[in-house]
Length: 357
Image 1 (cartoon, rainbow, N blue to C red):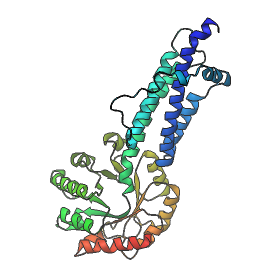
Image 2 (image 1 turned 180 degrees about the horizontal axis):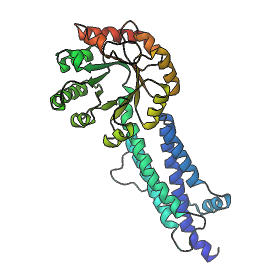
Image 3 (image 1 turned 180 degrees about the vertical axis):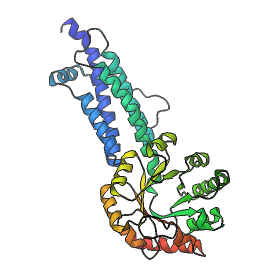
Image 4 (image 1 turned 90 degrees about the vertical axis):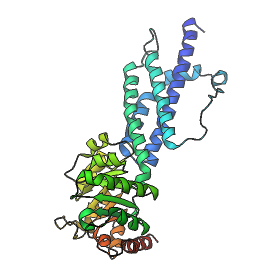
């Protein structure tokens, strides 16, 4: 073997190992985005990155195969103290993203060696590394929010301060949870934020004790102050992308819509669920636009996010709402107007459970 060829063998082995780590790590991240999160945008980004980075001409690939020598790799049996044998999915994502990022940095530096391997672009590996930082953040954010969005099923109880008519927020939430409510949302247009703060903190504590997501309508600052699980935004509220930057990555965001186009838009903007309505006329918001079950069906066909139907839903019509494509039924009046909140909630939950059967 010529001297120059012999000198290039170690470099080719490093390149081969780095490209393999890049391909393997990106494939895992891509499969999580595609098959677990059902996220088309992240899947496309990761797949495109993998193809652009790992693709090489056949003669160069032959050189890499020729240089490969796994049997004599001194690092193959080295174990580091403290390495975990079993890891949760977010930790696996972080570990593989770092694995790819480190390999990209290795490739970036190797391309700078004078007389190095021709055809390798340092800037390409550098740009991919920075892109992956953002993709990792988005992937982890989706994963950390996934458990909360999975709980958006069944009865979604909205505590409206005006509809409470002076009754206790905490007592209403407690009774609804006993009746089977799966999600609690606070909607308030009457009290000051100073008055609301102790209420939202108590509601958060209650919901945490019962493993029920607690969502606050409109007020991002109260979500932060109470460490609530999510924020619900109306069509005229803070843009989803802005709210996402301000909230911790594990907080979910819901958005209200009345049209298919808007539902598609909020999905692309990063919402975690969509509230559709008003499905029927409702005493909770007499000015609400009634869109009906057909609109709910149309939105169900257009988006993959969980849908929360809202507006005029009662125990008598909740089954047809779920049949039309809703994951949750958001209810205010049918529960808060009842003398026994727990019993009213239970009646609706019984209808929902019958629907599932």
